[in-house]
Image (cartoon, rainbow, N blue to C red; front, side, top):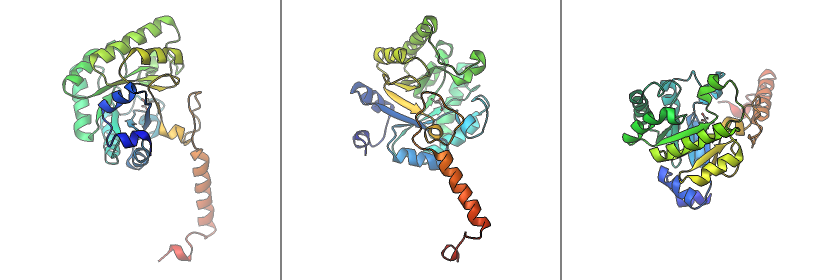
Length: 272
Ligand code: KIV
């Protein structure tokens, strides 16, 4: 068991700030279903993100844009049923918060009420400030997401590293400060230069969780299916694969098919 597991029976947004202030790094992974969430939570991961990456990983869409609020609620409620300890953060999907703050609040309330998740995450800086404030006023914890924001992929056109130029870096720093001042409990920083991410993390008191943002931030998040090596067509530099599940699973399926064809499965002891 990790040190963090002994310290906290349940992770709250307050625990994360405490971890940052004493220099303990925060671990975060995605999950979209009960079985995976049970394993991730049991392993002592601090935060489980029900990411809109479910749109890619679970549904096979090219982008995160098509996933709906109803689908996010379905994934999140499956995850929440599995959890004993982790904080469950649920992505507000594209189209559920951008049009106006009242709609953003309605969407966030649906997530909290219908899934039992503990917090919501949304992408963007000052463009979504009013929506963030509205959600926070209702007592719902909000996590920001800056840098590469996949819901805006058609605006940027590529998934390359963000904020390499001074102007974009300055806007990112301003947005991060705005999110902290507005009351967000943390920020995901995706695919930005490590030096910039470290600077942001050092300048704020709320935790900065990085993905492709280097080691100078307060925690790390990865898409679970990627770090397990279940996906093999996605190979960004920041991704560390802890298993080669794609090969392991392929071998298992091939062996099963062979056993069935050869009438080796089931054997005497595997039947009634
Ligand atoms: O949807 C997601 O999985 C995310 C992570 C990449 C941070 O937002």
